[in-house]
Image (cartoon, rainbow, N blue to C red):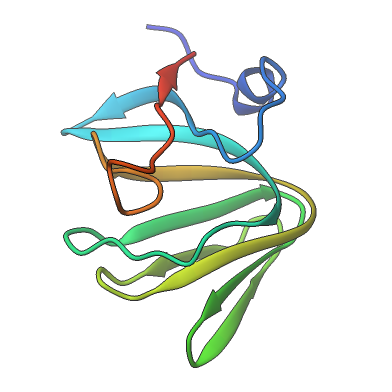
Length: 116
């Protein structure tokens, strides 16, 4: 089993808001994603939402506050809490969540995830 270079994985795609699975463990997907602009307000009723910023600056809007993250910062949105990620410039993230978790909180509107 070889080490996974996250920068190399991020260089393989240009799509925004489309998480790519790079590995898995204990029923969880480990993913990288590129963001720019504003996502939809959403929540995840059954799981927390893990964000680790690899590059850039991300704001996670919450209904009563904003959380500002830079490279190396980590934030976990508790399950059921409505939030909206916003990236003024391109941001690269590492995400970890239970396999099959829809990125919008709703399987009908979620992007299909692929493994790279």
